[in-house]
Length: 545
Image (cartoon, rainbow, N blue to C red; front, side, top):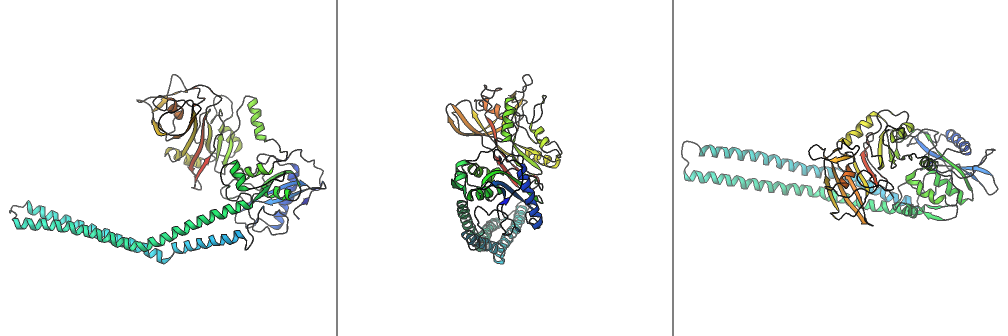
């Protein structure tokens, strides 16, 4: 039975839980304890390949006014069984013989065929034979070049000897030189053709592999799109929309894999289908933590932004939801003349990527104003090391990576030193650019010691500063532009835009190098680096509206 009654006198909340930042309501805590007992009793997380799992509880009220809860888990759970304790998936793609499993098996068959060819003896020997012939040719050509060099040395020695060279002997030496050069050309041609002939069979197999991989991608993309169309989600108004429609409207992109299989959409969908009124909700982790995320058993976590935020925006229409506590705090801070808080874009046990608001410090200044560093220390009290890897000007908004350990900090800083970190900024220039749509600015910079914190262009004493730019559009007398810094000098982008030897147009709102506006229109929207622990290349993007 998916509806589990709750016998309690705990008062219900007036508004539904804001799912992306909340303290679990006592009713959720009560329901979660029952679910945790069930998990432990049935040993649901024992031996699960993922270690642990995210579980959720949705407190609801039925048509007769009885309070109960629904329970769910994200994704699949190996030992869950089918006793009806958890709500069903929004769409069950795992039905044996169903459309998804049938086409998935076809893709699996392609994978098997690709692996068979790549690992076959035929393919290995074909490639090995081509490599052997090429190596043989390289060796023979090298030996013949040495033979040619010895013959030339002998001819040169004969020509420089005391005994004069007769005409017929000179002709013979010239003929030998010509013959050896021609023989070298013939030898090169022979081995090029022989190597190509030997590689032809391997190339045929490689072409087959590439064709199968193209077919696999086309089938996978089509099956993924079909699957997304099957996730038709309801809201309190009874409106039904599939995940692709929801994501395209809100993000302009296709949903990521696994969208619709998290706890929150499952529980809300079941509630709407069965006439249950959602009251409050919470999601918690149970079991061992995953390898690359910071999760603790029994801790409650917000719904994920990447997969769930667009879905829940649709599903919660018609429900009175709590105000975002973080937004409320930001508003209160703003009213008090203080900064907003950074948004966490990504976090695991080794690092955190945040979206710094404009007019927020990267590191503490002389005042007691909060900073990204103070925010990080408060959120991660057990972290060691300097934490701050790089900085943004206070007026600049955008992405910053924060390290939680000394080793991670050292690795990330080295990536910045080696210029392997990729960054992209979005800026609005306070004027219309009439030059090339793409180019590079190279202006050396140094501090203006008489007017700090301003920087100046100094060809004699400045440090190299290079910025690539690409114009997006020019409208309304303003230029929208992408900036790609190849170096990381203080105020580099601001000076390169404003200086007459650069673009000659200051960034809108740049009080130091231009004129005041509502804010500095400079945003670090893209950051890419290699994760120091997983060694995977990771990219983050926050587009500024």
